Length: 167
Picture 1 (cartoon, rainbow, N blue to C red):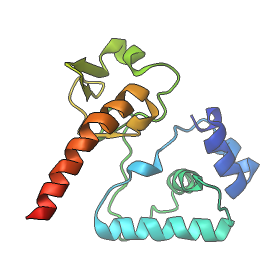
Picture 2 (picture 1 turned 60 degrees about the horizontal axis):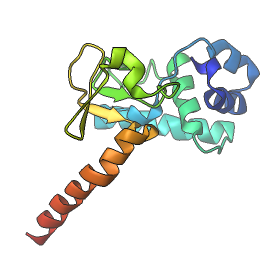
Picture 3 (picture 1 turned 90 degrees about the vertical axis):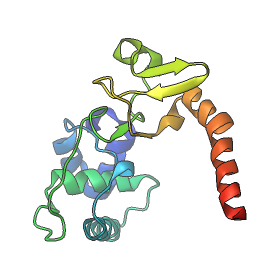
Picture 4 (picture 1 turned 45 degrees about the horizontal axis):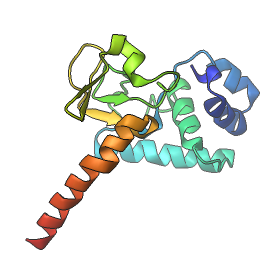
């Protein structure tokens, strides 16, 4: 919840004041880092984000998260013609599985140990229904996943990219 996060509460308070922060404190945090959509809709969304920054004069690192939540919960984009619909999925149920808010205990302890599956030194992150997560956001907040990516997968990706560049 927004009110349980010092950072999210700070971003909203600095940008919009205590009244707005209090009104939104029971709302779930919606991550700005996993926004996707059609180009025209994203263009409208990004212009709104820049407008929020300009209008509030808020330049805090991470303040985009506050703008993002404010735009959603205030319905400020509801009448934007370029945005056909806005969908929000709970953590672990959509295309993007956001692990950033799950730092209160090791990932192995979430979902009865079924959220992250490790086999032969490789990791898979699952959604709550047991399906493989297509996209995992903020995996770097969890040392075992970050190490796996940094030490193994990143090297593989770089090698593939270098091979493509030689062609």
